[in-house]
Length: 127
Image 1 (cartoon, helix red, strand yellow):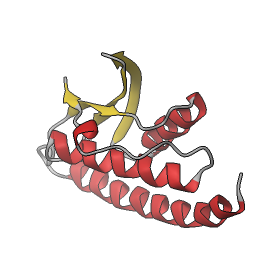
Image 2 (spheres, rainbow, N blue to C red):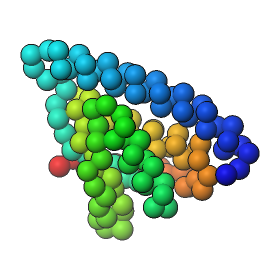
Image 3 (tube, rainbow, N blue to C red):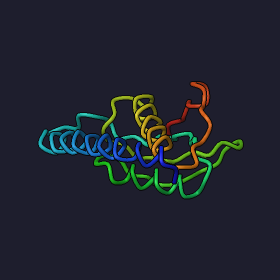
């Protein structure tokens, strides 16, 4: 682990803690209302992570966040995706954008960063 990534790690941990608090509040309000506030969906999130340990950490972070859970890893046409069940996003693209941002922040904070992707690379799918 580089010295620079050690300095970025606490910032990521604070950001992730805030995301967990926001998600917890959203799940609580969703439980206390008579109907679902957000549709349930499964999305395919294209991965920028190229190492197995990065994918494992990213999947774990998603699962730790209330309202989302990692359900698998698939490869289609040489692109690897994480399958994620989400109950906290209004649209498929909002879910993908939020999860891509989480992965980006994780990769910046941890060693072995992956190259940047273009917006076209971030187009995921919904099942």
